[in-house]
Image (tube, rainbow, N blue to C red; front, side, top):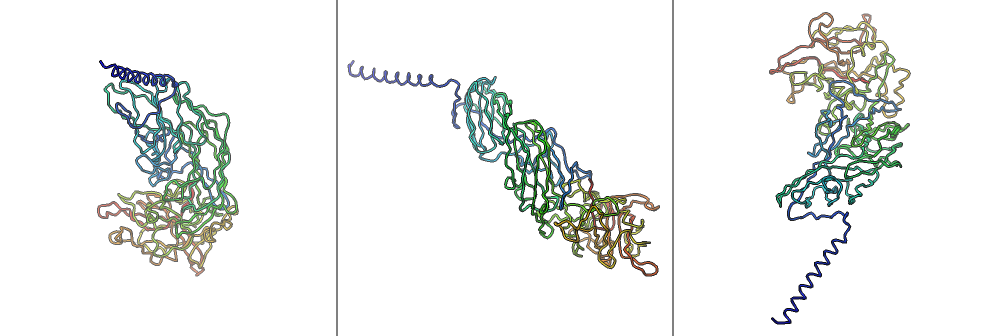
Amino acid sequence: MNFSTIKKANWIVATVLLATSGMLATSCSKDKNAPVEQGSEHEGTNLVLSVSGINENNDTVVKQGSTNGKAAKYNVQSFSDVDVATTVDNNVPFVSASGIAVKGYNGSSQVAAAGSNLRAALASGVTYRLYLLSSDGTQVISSQQFTVGGSGTIAVTPGTTYKWVALSYNNQDAIPTITTGNTSLLMPQNKDILYASGNITVPSTPGSNVSLPITFNHAFSRLAIELNSMGVFGPMNSGTVSVTGLTLRTGTINLATGAITPEATTFTPTVNWSSFTNIDPAYSDAKIVYAYTAGTTAINNIGVSVSNLAITHRDNNTARTYGSATPINMTFSVTPELGKSHRLLANIVESTLTSSRNTVKWARSNLYYDPSVDNGHNPYRFYANNTQTATTDGRGYFSFGSAIPRKFVSSTVAKQDPCALIYPQGLWKQPSNTDFAPYTTGNGLLADVLGNLLALVIPAPAPGASGLGTNYMQYTLAASNNGSGNPAFGANSNVLRFYHNGEITNVNVLTDFGSDGLVTLNLGNSYGNETAYWTNVSAVNLLGLAGLGGWGFHGANKSTALGSQFVGALGTAELLANVDLLGLNVVSSTFKNVRCVRAN
């Protein structure tokens, strides 16, 4: 054999051995506790990751604002120009993983019910890290950071059982690694810490990909402060907000066990108007800000102050400002629970008027329903200004028991209290006959819905009523409720005034319908002469006459036998007719206005 060839071959072997020994030496010199940062593309067996969302189930989530007219449990506070209905609950709104907005105030009053398996979506680009540990959680094997919306795979060994842990801050921040013997991380302040874990066994067959869907849980307690102006019927344009007493703690989380240890020190985040975002991007009448804490002790006296809150009432886009003279100061208390969401809800709602006749709290103007504005969002509202409505405006004329104006209650239109459907649902209701009684001189019977109401006999002036010779009747306010001092409203809305809007009486239920299925707006000579309202009280055998009936209120300018004029008012008992219309069981009645009162 050629000596030079043998020599060359030996040098090649030596070089390979040296390179191999160097690689081994380098491998052995690494920290045995350090995790391996895996790439996203692997040959062989991999876990294929997918993010299902954030678990939003709360054991204590309740259903608020039911449509059955029962008042929700709100703490109502009165300020110089507005009221606020506050509550603390678990109904934090979110966008589900299916893309459906889930709110505590949507049209059907549905919220995230316990056990409903609702999951919130994570935004594309949010970072999370997946850690692989030994099945007993004592050894850190590897980890890799991924982003929501991207593909994610991580290499695993066939036939091995792993404990996996996923961690995210619900933003685009980088997530730290951990090492064996040091699996705890101090979390950043005021971040939505998301945690998920479980065990997974990889099949023994090599090259098999294994699916790993990840559903995160909120590790800390999430506190949501919501400002809502749906109760004043318009979007919030600007305002001044400050929050005090929001004492929070971050904490350390042991990724292997999920245990959270709160820090001893506290911090208080700065919250102002710019901190709030719209819950639904399409509307700015509900704004929210989030805070996160690892503490579980009660946080008392959280102060929320709002001033110069400018809104646009959706009735004729009327500009209105609340809290201009005196700030709206609210106080909340909450006991955080890890993994739970707590909502501190401040509903800005219209204030009421109380007359000297009783303690009933009246709305300042009539109710109307208009689903044509804002795609049906928040369709039940009070008129922005208390004035006589136009003869072409049929949005405020309701049949007895109907929540839809100019429609009869039937087998397809259920009997409902329209006042109870005003946001926040359950805060308002239709008045009862008893509520109206002190404003009348007694009760009268309307035996025929086709009868002439102007012929209704009213024996004497209504107690405390004024407005003779005008297009309205008015009652004196209680000394403790000087409505004229409210700077957010005009003079007409600062008095308890009922306008003579008339009512629809001569209804032929077989013919008087337009192409939209609504009763024709035919007010006749009642417009400008009569005030007519429904109550929520139905009865049988009204004033000795058999049959189903409903109570109402009727007011008008009247004359005595000697010709003296006065403002009169009666409670009216009206018999209701059951009519078979196109196969529907229709309850026929007149169509009157609705003036709501507070349910609590």
